[in-house]
Image (cartoon, rainbow, N blue to C red):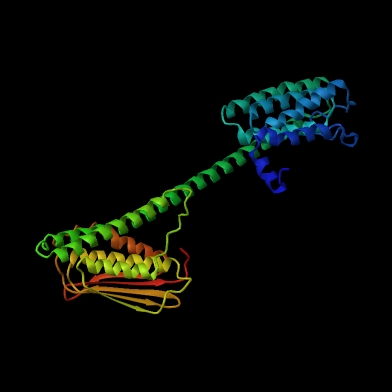
Length: 384
């Protein structure tokens, strides 16, 4: 047996014609209820005639096309209008005649092509109907026919308003989807920049240092091993970023652990950068995005130290508070840039945007002695 909770989902998957069919059948069935006879939409006020065999055809012509009111709105409106005209001329005034304003609303909402021509043709068809009813002795005054025509126009306008509202909502969702995709691309681009820049910079510096260690095999082997380890870590991080591009993958950014921060510092030391690392406190369980952004601040700062001040003393201080994480990375002197790749300036700009997004403060300034210092205060508590 089909589970009851799956019924709504299965119903939504059905074609719109199938979903609209029950309403059309209900409209026809209700028309044969004696208490509702003569209660439909009417114009001309001809005397009510009892239902006969032809009335069945007229009621079916008025009600059943509503099943196609969204799939084929023009066909629905044409058939319902024809049934309505026969209903008024014969004087049945069946409840199914109420389908005319419904068909008009549906056509105004779902008709895609020839909308103006449809309005003109229906308006032209209304004139002979009014003339026929008058010749049959309808007591309706001319102004009554005009008011009824304006009511039909109102029904069309309601459908047109629903159409424009639906289009505006679709456009809004499209813009939101584009903005979301753009933000996701920007986020992944930042991660790619941070990962590739740091690892490649470390590998370039280490490889450059290896050129001068040919006379010391032990040190050369250690340096080349460090290059290999850095390459492996780069591949692991790149695979994680590629996973983010998979729509079936959980796109949440993995928050680096404290151990990974120590590994980052050690990797920088192996690249020939003297780094002093101190920590105060422990990261809170609810640090979330703050801990990740702090990791990126340290990573980008150490990358810049390798690029622009290779060999200079670098000090990294991390302070974990209950409500914020403070990062302070300073590098003394200008060091050497031999063998290091140049920068694009995107790293610090990306860090500033990340910190600002969490409501924190970020600064990157040169020191009087020729070095530079990066400071960040990152409010904690945002889940990544």
